[in-house]
Amino acid sequence: MEKIKKLWRFCTSPEMILYLVFGVLTTVINIVAYTFLRPRLPLDEVSAVLTANAIAWVLAVAFAFITNKLFVFQSKSFAARLFWWELITFVGARLFSLVVDEYCMYLLVTVLKAGDLFSKIVVNVLVVIINYVFSKLIIFKKKA
Image 1 (tube, rainbow, N blue to C red):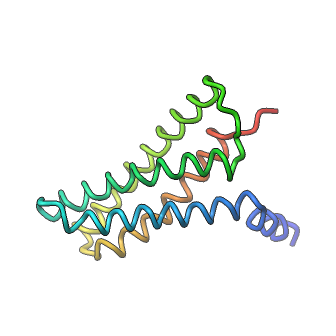
Image 2 (cartoon, rainbow, N blue to C red; image 1 turned 60 degrees about the vertical axis):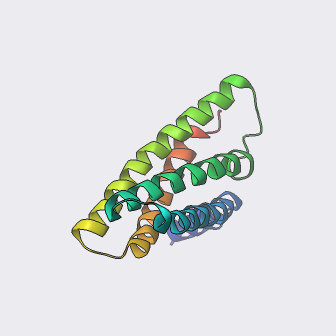
């Protein structure tokens, strides 16, 4: 019972709620950008899916960095060394999750023949979890 209470406190903490709110907004930016770009790219289907996905990723990462830094993990310092550490590790972690994102999109859309928008939503759930773990444990880790 104590583990359930601890999990509940974690899930309802201000940090987690803010992460989820901004995570949802980041996901909306990602999906809207993808949905807008995908049919407008003069490429074959697979190339259009992957290219639109990558561009949507760049827009979402820029938004996520700012909101995660300032509001979720409350890293208010803009000292050059800390800022660059956070930015570089944030982008690096997001590049890792982009690889997961692209691979899963490819697998779901081309191999499993799932719809691309459905696949995009499912894959984003996995990506949000990966991104939180990296942000919490490495990028914006509070120094003791």
